[in-house]
Length: 98
Image (cartoon, rainbow, N blue to C red; front, side, top):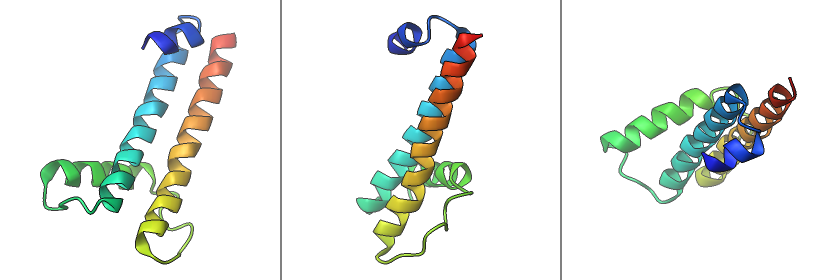
């Protein structure tokens, strides 16, 4: 949180936007990692992360249909994570200016 405070000048709205974007990207990144490492999908934590990532990346989940499946997951979910980071931090920077 100290990095966000310093980077966004202590503006609480800007900090909240940046943190939410970071959390969204982190959840998606965790799902990518769990999928690539073949995590037990019967596990409740893995199931929660998968459901959360599916919801967050619903708009990009089937953007590209490629093989193998790990590449499809990496590409489609990775795009969502990058967009959340880029848009979230750009929005936080714009809010800080006001």
